[in-house]
Image 1 (tube, rainbow, N blue to C red):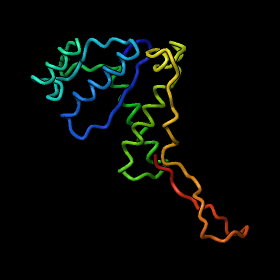
Image 2 (cartoon, rainbow, N blue to C red):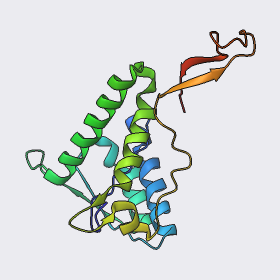
Image 3 (cartoon, one colour):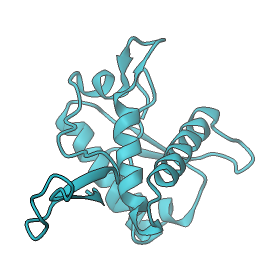
Length: 168
């Protein structure tokens, strides 16, 4: 989404067929804040094309434009690379199992939404919604925590806290 700095938005999809549901969700979220989204640009993948997609775009007052497959959007590609690199770094650092990929994705995207860009002197989230993002639901991804275990001895050499990994 473009208005000032790029705004990454992500949802985990079970299948590509869920892409239209995600487009509808983002459209509604933006509209609730007075932001108008008029154009969907895609690579022409089947999840963005067809009668169901055309009906959705028409209902939402949007237009679908297909970019040629050889034509890359460098800004979008750079953002996708940043997200992938962030996920990879978060998962490697945390020694997280592959099953936590979605949690890492959402954590990285929330972080990127909050970055203040020098060229705009504002975060992507603030540029779009004129407010700071609510990060209360975001917890440190797969970070080390100490779980309280009442079955352990209370002696100073046997603390009741045992190391664990936090998973949101």
